Length: 521
Image (cartoon, rainbow, N blue to C red):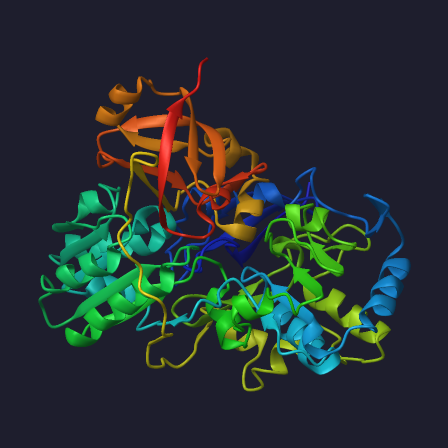
């Protein structure tokens, strides 16, 4: 038996933790601590620990497919590429949009930008990280040296290893202030907890800012995936500037910072507008799409892939060489641990193949060649040990609409909120965690958390099924009962498992009026 350890970067959140992939006879079979990591010191959260399980998931895509009638049918790679080239030739400039996952490598993003802007001549190039937030002061390790930290949201579940640095700071005597909608795990380690009414997070952040003291203060916001993220970040930035505190916003996706730095930042509203007649989606589940022509390259048959005209199988993080840039602007190496199935390629290679069919040769013969086309002063050797931290820039948050407190009614008497869970990721990351059998074993489906007094009023017990309804629709799910939730507030994690996602009820809002009904057993 041949055994080796290959260090890499976790494919989930923007913290940028490292671990070793355990490779037996050429196949990834587990993880082990990478003690030299400058980000996590060898620690990982549950998602990182079980991230190896998705690599050889039986749900992996291995063959190109073209939709014939209502069915996706396996075809040769040459037929799929030829069909794509033929179809794309009929679209001009901003008829065409490219959306890349912010979990993709820098190399993937660079090549896909070239496909969008140089080949298809479109400015519609974006990623889920494009929500107008760019704030990355200091490094994650330096958080432990702060004397006062304001945390916005449940960082213990959204970005656990950043929360660990906050806990280190508390052990060193720092004051910890937490703003959240409920008594979250993060709130329970706070010196001061400021409870935010659903939809009134900005007001609570301003109030919490009055509690900041000390000469080395930090404001931390774990970015989620709702329409309110920019407004919340703006309030946090205002507080950090008024208190002369450092501000760091941790992206939800593993390469969220890299995606922004590399220009995958066009407005989602413009990209997803009616003027977009064709879409090219790389590694991201956006739900079912409706357009004249859709190409998806992904490792799994997501709901977006099911609506595509062409699907191209892509490699996962353990099958590619490349880089990702974490929340602190640290570029780190992702290393190939096993070979992908025959015909399965990295996103950057697939984009290069499509470009060549359209008559453009990118000239990339390796992942490092792609990397150096942008970062010419760096090399994989230079960043191989501890990565390379890019220079800090002034924090920026785009102008955005204000978010107002949720107004309940007799028809919808509850405020429904969404937040992270430590077991599953957002968006494309949710696709990854859904293919980790241990994570699914722990949390096999979405669920609702409800206050114990509300549970008595409705007549439900732990594990009972409930139907949650908003003006967007209804979903059925099991319920968890806890004193941590406020009366009149229900929480459903922002995760996608199977064909259910809270986004189906909220349409991207962080908080929305809802009603809860018990379902008979």
